[in-house]
Length: 143
Image (cartoon, rainbow, N blue to C red; front, side, top):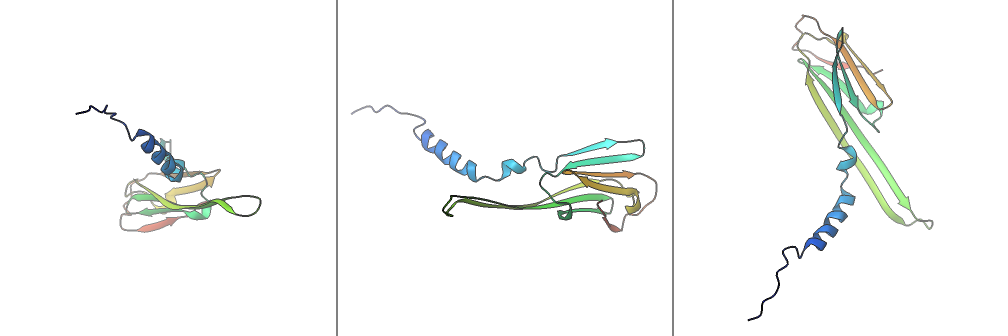
């Protein structure tokens, strides 16, 4: 009987190559910080700042529904790389939608909310007051 040395990680090289191949195809890392949001308390109420890099204003929707402020953003990206003779080396398409909801209370109305999108940052500010508007859905205009 012959003893053959056992190498516990005999597939490591294969695994590394496999991981590298699919890491290049993984689109999520570039979007992992999309919709990072800060909530700031101000004298007049609250302010939310949401990072939406690469998203166009017309692809953002802000909605107030039963006390929940919902921000939805969609993104479609195309990238192409070609050689001089026009053969594709790489052609990628990325698309997706992102959604965040925040409970801001039943006492906030559409008129209380102001939204502005500038340089990839969506800023939503609103005051708080005591009035119940729970069963109404409102779309917020973005400046």
